[in-house]
Image 1 (tube, rainbow, N blue to C red):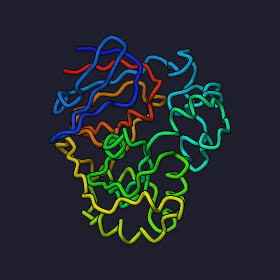
Image 2 (cartoon, rainbow, N blue to C red):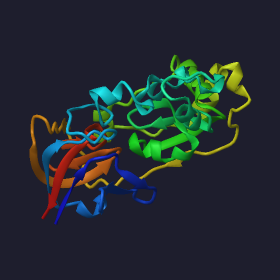
Image 3 (cartoon, rainbow, N blue to C red):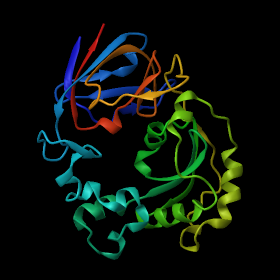
Image 4 (cartoon, rainbow, N blue to C red):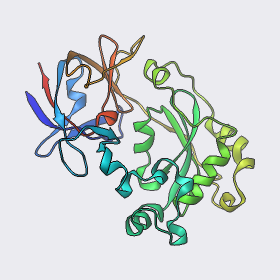
Length: 264
Protein backbone atom coordinates (compact mmCIF):
# COMPACT_ATOMS: atom_id res chain seq x y z
CA UNK A 1 0.00 0.00 0.00
CA UNK A 2 1.34 3.43 -1.00
CA UNK A 3 0.58 6.89 0.32
CA UNK A 4 1.84 10.04 -1.41
CA UNK A 5 1.57 13.53 0.02
CA UNK A 6 3.10 16.45 1.85
CA UNK A 7 4.11 15.76 5.43
CA UNK A 8 2.46 17.72 8.23
CA UNK A 9 2.52 17.20 11.97
CA UNK A 10 0.87 13.91 12.88
CA UNK A 11 -2.61 14.28 14.35
CA UNK A 12 -3.15 12.44 17.62
CA UNK A 13 -5.95 10.96 19.66
CA UNK A 14 -5.30 10.34 23.34
CA UNK A 15 -5.85 6.75 24.32
CA UNK A 16 -4.05 3.75 25.75
CA UNK A 17 -1.96 3.86 23.68
CA UNK A 18 -2.12 7.20 21.85
CA UNK A 19 -3.32 6.90 18.24
CA UNK A 20 -1.34 8.68 15.50
CA UNK A 21 -2.57 9.77 12.06
CA UNK A 22 -0.86 11.15 8.96
CA UNK A 23 -3.26 13.38 7.04
CA UNK A 24 -2.82 13.74 3.26
CA UNK A 25 -4.83 15.77 0.77
CA UNK A 26 -7.13 12.93 -0.22
CA UNK A 27 -6.39 10.26 2.36
CA UNK A 28 -5.24 9.55 5.90
CA UNK A 29 -3.24 6.82 7.59
CA UNK A 30 -3.45 5.42 11.12
CA UNK A 31 0.29 5.10 11.75
CA UNK A 32 -0.20 2.68 14.67
CA UNK A 33 -1.23 0.05 12.11
CA UNK A 34 2.32 0.11 10.70
CA UNK A 35 3.97 -1.11 13.90
CA UNK A 36 6.17 -4.16 13.30
CA UNK A 37 5.89 -3.68 9.52
CA UNK A 38 8.56 -2.67 7.01
CA UNK A 39 8.06 0.94 5.97
CA UNK A 40 9.86 2.89 3.25
CA UNK A 41 10.03 6.67 2.94
CA UNK A 42 10.95 8.26 -0.39
CA UNK A 43 11.51 12.01 -0.62
CA UNK A 44 10.02 13.48 -3.84
CA UNK A 45 10.09 17.27 -3.57
CA UNK A 46 9.29 20.25 -1.32
CA UNK A 47 5.90 21.92 -0.93
CA UNK A 48 5.80 25.02 1.29
CA UNK A 49 2.81 24.80 3.63
CA UNK A 50 1.92 28.41 2.83
CA UNK A 51 2.63 29.11 -0.86
CA UNK A 52 2.62 25.43 -1.98
CA UNK A 53 5.64 26.04 -4.21
CA UNK A 54 8.47 23.53 -4.64
CA UNK A 55 10.95 25.69 -2.72
CA UNK A 56 13.42 24.37 -0.17
CA UNK A 57 11.88 24.30 3.29
CA UNK A 58 13.50 26.76 5.68
CA UNK A 59 11.69 26.23 9.00
CA UNK A 60 8.33 25.01 10.33
CA UNK A 61 7.28 23.70 6.92
CA UNK A 62 7.67 27.10 5.21
CA UNK A 63 10.05 28.32 2.54
CA UNK A 64 12.44 31.15 3.37
CA UNK A 65 10.25 33.94 1.97
CA UNK A 66 7.07 32.77 3.67
CA UNK A 67 8.81 32.17 6.99
CA UNK A 68 9.75 35.83 7.24
CA UNK A 69 6.41 37.16 6.02
CA UNK A 70 3.46 35.20 7.38
CA UNK A 71 2.03 35.62 10.91
CA UNK A 72 2.11 31.85 11.53
CA UNK A 73 5.92 32.04 11.74
CA UNK A 74 6.36 35.29 13.69
CA UNK A 75 8.71 35.45 16.67
CA UNK A 76 5.86 35.38 19.21
CA UNK A 77 5.02 31.83 18.11
CA UNK A 78 8.22 30.53 19.73
CA UNK A 79 8.51 33.36 22.27
CA UNK A 80 4.99 34.04 23.58
CA UNK A 81 6.24 36.83 25.85
CA UNK A 82 6.61 38.93 22.66
CA UNK A 83 2.83 38.83 22.05
CA UNK A 84 1.27 42.30 21.63
CA UNK A 85 -2.30 41.67 20.44
CA UNK A 86 -3.61 42.44 23.96
CA UNK A 87 -2.27 45.97 23.42
CA UNK A 88 -3.81 46.23 19.95
CA UNK A 89 -0.33 46.36 18.42
CA UNK A 90 0.28 44.55 15.15
CA UNK A 91 3.31 42.43 14.43
CA UNK A 92 2.50 40.96 11.00
CA UNK A 93 -1.31 40.58 10.92
CA UNK A 94 -3.32 41.92 13.86
CA UNK A 95 -6.51 40.00 13.02
CA UNK A 96 -4.62 36.70 13.04
CA UNK A 97 -2.66 37.68 16.15
CA UNK A 98 -5.85 38.56 18.04
CA UNK A 99 -7.41 35.25 17.03
CA UNK A 100 -4.48 33.20 18.36
CA UNK A 101 -3.12 35.31 21.20
CA UNK A 102 -6.37 36.47 22.80
CA UNK A 103 -7.63 33.10 23.92
CA UNK A 104 -7.02 30.98 27.04
CA UNK A 105 -3.46 29.70 27.37
CA UNK A 106 -1.95 27.15 29.72
CA UNK A 107 1.43 27.23 31.41
CA UNK A 108 2.32 23.63 32.20
CA UNK A 109 4.98 21.31 33.52
CA UNK A 110 5.78 18.24 31.43
CA UNK A 111 8.20 15.36 31.95
CA UNK A 112 9.62 14.02 28.71
CA UNK A 113 13.38 13.88 29.25
CA UNK A 114 13.23 16.02 32.41
CA UNK A 115 10.73 18.36 34.01
CA UNK A 116 10.22 21.41 31.80
CA UNK A 117 7.90 24.40 31.66
CA UNK A 118 5.98 25.26 28.53
CA UNK A 119 3.09 27.24 27.06
CA UNK A 120 0.20 26.14 24.87
CA UNK A 121 -3.28 27.22 23.94
CA UNK A 122 -5.86 25.59 26.21
CA UNK A 123 -7.46 23.81 23.25
CA UNK A 124 -4.09 22.13 22.55
CA UNK A 125 -4.11 20.15 25.83
CA UNK A 126 -3.06 17.30 25.83
CA UNK A 127 -1.93 17.46 22.16
CA UNK A 128 1.06 19.64 22.99
CA UNK A 129 2.27 17.18 25.64
CA UNK A 130 1.88 14.25 23.26
CA UNK A 131 3.90 16.09 20.59
CA UNK A 132 6.71 16.58 23.09
CA UNK A 133 6.78 12.93 24.11
CA UNK A 134 5.87 13.69 27.72
CA UNK A 135 4.71 10.70 29.75
CA UNK A 136 3.25 12.96 32.46
CA UNK A 137 2.19 16.61 32.60
CA UNK A 138 0.18 19.07 34.66
CA UNK A 139 -1.34 22.52 34.14
CA UNK A 140 -0.13 25.16 36.61
CA UNK A 141 -1.60 28.44 35.29
CA UNK A 142 -4.52 29.22 32.97
CA UNK A 143 -4.46 32.81 31.69
CA UNK A 144 -6.68 34.71 29.21
CA UNK A 145 -3.97 35.58 26.67
CA UNK A 146 -0.63 34.45 25.27
CA UNK A 147 1.36 37.36 26.70
CA UNK A 148 0.58 36.46 30.33
CA UNK A 149 1.50 32.85 29.64
CA UNK A 150 4.74 33.98 28.04
CA UNK A 151 5.94 36.16 30.90
CA UNK A 152 5.06 33.37 33.34
CA UNK A 153 7.13 30.88 31.37
CA UNK A 154 10.07 33.30 31.26
CA UNK A 155 9.91 33.76 35.05
CA UNK A 156 9.81 30.01 35.70
CA UNK A 157 12.61 29.17 33.25
CA UNK A 158 15.09 30.45 35.83
CA UNK A 159 14.06 27.59 38.14
CA UNK A 160 13.13 24.69 35.84
CA UNK A 161 14.14 23.59 32.33
CA UNK A 162 12.36 24.66 29.15
CA UNK A 163 13.90 22.24 26.65
CA UNK A 164 13.46 18.53 25.89
CA UNK A 165 16.48 16.31 25.26
CA UNK A 166 15.09 14.36 22.30
CA UNK A 167 17.58 11.50 22.63
CA UNK A 168 16.77 10.93 26.31
CA UNK A 169 13.06 11.14 25.54
CA UNK A 170 13.31 8.57 22.74
CA UNK A 171 15.50 6.17 24.72
CA UNK A 172 12.92 6.41 27.52
CA UNK A 173 15.68 7.15 30.04
CA UNK A 174 13.30 9.06 32.26
CA UNK A 175 12.01 8.88 35.79
CA UNK A 176 8.63 9.71 37.22
CA UNK A 177 8.40 13.03 39.01
CA UNK A 178 5.81 14.40 41.41
CA UNK A 179 4.60 17.31 39.30
CA UNK A 180 2.24 18.50 42.02
CA UNK A 181 5.26 19.04 44.27
CA UNK A 182 7.00 20.86 41.42
CA UNK A 183 3.94 23.05 40.91
CA UNK A 184 3.87 24.06 44.56
CA UNK A 185 7.62 24.71 44.61
CA UNK A 186 7.42 26.98 41.57
CA UNK A 187 4.32 28.91 42.69
CA UNK A 188 6.42 31.57 44.45
CA UNK A 189 8.08 32.53 41.15
CA UNK A 190 4.90 33.20 39.18
CA UNK A 191 4.63 36.90 38.19
CA UNK A 192 2.13 38.98 40.12
CA UNK A 193 0.07 39.62 36.95
CA UNK A 194 -0.57 35.88 36.59
CA UNK A 195 -0.84 34.78 40.21
CA UNK A 196 -4.64 35.01 40.28
CA UNK A 197 -4.71 32.38 37.53
CA UNK A 198 -2.73 29.76 39.44
CA UNK A 199 -4.43 26.34 39.41
CA UNK A 200 -4.62 25.13 43.01
CA UNK A 201 -6.16 21.69 42.67
CA UNK A 202 -5.58 19.35 39.76
CA UNK A 203 -3.82 16.12 39.03
CA UNK A 204 -1.21 14.86 36.60
CA UNK A 205 -2.13 13.59 33.16
CA UNK A 206 -0.34 10.35 32.21
CA UNK A 207 0.27 9.42 28.58
CA UNK A 208 1.03 6.05 27.01
CA UNK A 209 2.88 5.90 23.69
CA UNK A 210 2.75 3.04 21.16
CA UNK A 211 6.36 1.84 21.40
CA UNK A 212 7.43 -1.79 21.03
CA UNK A 213 11.17 -1.12 21.16
CA UNK A 214 13.07 1.98 22.25
CA UNK A 215 16.29 2.92 20.41
CA UNK A 216 19.57 2.52 22.29
CA UNK A 217 21.49 5.05 20.19
CA UNK A 218 18.93 7.08 18.22
CA UNK A 219 20.15 8.57 14.96
CA UNK A 220 18.03 11.05 13.06
CA UNK A 221 16.93 10.51 9.45
CA UNK A 222 17.67 13.50 7.19
CA UNK A 223 15.70 13.26 3.95
CA UNK A 224 17.93 15.80 2.19
CA UNK A 225 20.91 13.50 2.74
CA UNK A 226 19.02 10.20 2.63
CA UNK A 227 16.08 10.54 0.20
CA UNK A 228 15.17 6.85 0.50
CA UNK A 229 14.94 4.91 3.75
CA UNK A 230 13.46 1.53 4.67
CA UNK A 231 13.20 -0.29 8.01
CA UNK A 232 10.70 -1.88 10.41
CA UNK A 233 8.64 0.57 12.47
CA UNK A 234 8.94 -0.17 16.19
CA UNK A 235 7.34 2.81 17.86
CA UNK A 236 5.87 6.31 17.77
CA UNK A 237 6.65 8.88 20.45
CA UNK A 238 6.29 12.62 20.37
CA UNK A 239 6.36 13.37 16.65
CA UNK A 240 8.99 10.68 16.01
CA UNK A 241 8.80 7.40 14.15
CA UNK A 242 11.18 4.85 15.72
CA UNK A 243 12.69 2.10 13.56
CA UNK A 244 14.36 -1.21 14.39
CA UNK A 245 17.85 0.00 13.39
CA UNK A 246 17.69 2.89 15.91
CA UNK A 247 16.89 5.41 13.15
CA UNK A 248 14.29 7.97 14.21
CA UNK A 249 12.31 10.30 11.96
CA UNK A 250 10.84 13.56 13.22
CA UNK A 251 7.71 14.09 11.16
CA UNK A 252 7.16 17.62 12.41
CA UNK A 253 10.70 18.67 11.47
CA UNK A 254 9.98 17.45 7.94
CA UNK A 255 6.73 19.32 7.34
CA UNK A 256 6.60 20.55 3.76
CA UNK A 257 8.42 17.50 2.39
CA UNK A 258 6.43 15.52 -0.20
CA UNK A 259 7.05 11.81 0.26
CA UNK A 260 5.89 8.39 -0.77
CA UNK A 261 5.20 6.02 2.12
CA UNK A 262 5.11 2.33 1.33
CA UNK A 263 4.53 -0.53 3.73
CA UNK A 264 4.93 -4.28 3.31
